[in-house]
Length: 337
Image (cartoon, rainbow, N blue to C red; front, side):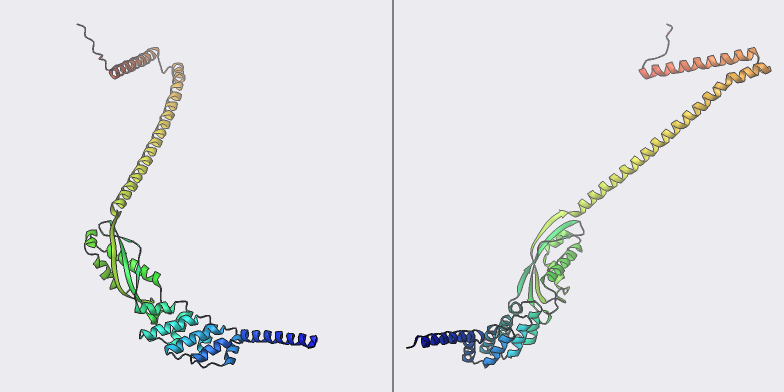
């Protein structure tokens, strides 16, 4: 055989192999055969159209086969549209199958809306069948007698399919239950009553309708643990007493400062008066000289004035000596005998 013919044949075979590989890659023949074997009527050109629309065919066809085998009638266009919208087609189909088995009425449109809202629709359906238990952390409340009481609750909830879109989540339920526990403990006159009947907390909280506006239905609230905390009332009284003491000390310091200032002011006034007296005393000799010149003061009058001053100085000296002896504890009584 001519070598050129052999080369041409090889090239043709290689090109044919490449074309077939591209064909089987772009056209999911195996997936189409699987769909036909499962009784799902889907055309090969529909699969090619998915490729053109950048839809991964197996992400749509496999859930469609699953739904067909479960007895669900779902249109291919709805599944493809949900995929293009960013939804999880496989999870939606699983949720529909679970809802059908549990006799829960759930349409594809609602299921797709729940999935696009960011919630796990399959988990919601499972929670509708098997309720979930949410455990809260220790929640502290203070009774009227000032004693802190800590309680931990277990909340049994069931998913509410009708409120999954737009309904509040678990955090809201925990927050509302915590608020109810704090309110119930705070309205108790004695912490002992809370310890004796912890079921009062669950009954009171359950009556408040805390699941309103949430994606869950609260079935029960059970107090798992309860404990005593600090004596908040005594601590507040201690803090108040300390604050009152500090205020009293501040006011006393203020009064002391005012007294010191008043004392300093009085001392200044005394010094001022002394200065004025000294100034006045300095003018006395001049006034006496003028009186002598004018003849208003005689020699005998001046001598009497000197005697009075001497007598005054003597009395002052005696008084100071007597006071000093009294301070030393000695007696100034003379015994002539």
